Amino acid sequence: MIVLKVDMLVKPGTETQCKEYIRAMQEHSRQEPGCLLYIGHQSIEDSRKFFFYEQYVDQAALDFHRNAPYFKQYVIGGLDGIMEHRTRDLCVTVE
Image 1 (tube, rainbow, N blue to C red):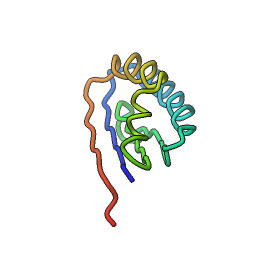
Image 2: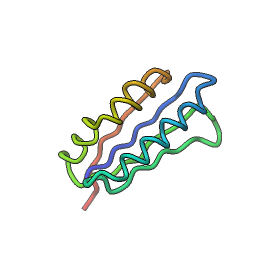
Image 3: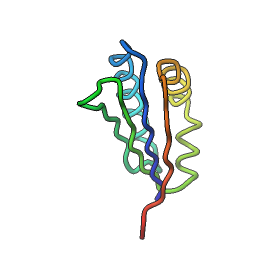
Image 4: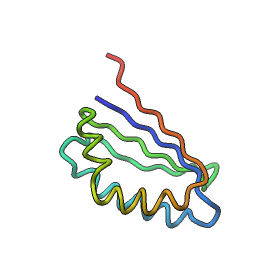
């Protein structure tokens, strides 16, 4: 299993738009055959901080996700434009 955690800091005033993009991504991504879990979160301490927690069966499933048309629409064409900062951690589970 592959786990991806993406931390985001969005520009002031874009929090509502960010939540809309996250909801759209959750709706689509959870239907992918190799996606085990896909959840967006918002910090209760800083409303501009968000993160995704994602689980995929393998690298091919993650590649499928990143090449999906809704990824291009809501992440590349949406979230990327409202983010000030992003970090990614790609992990595997400890067996």
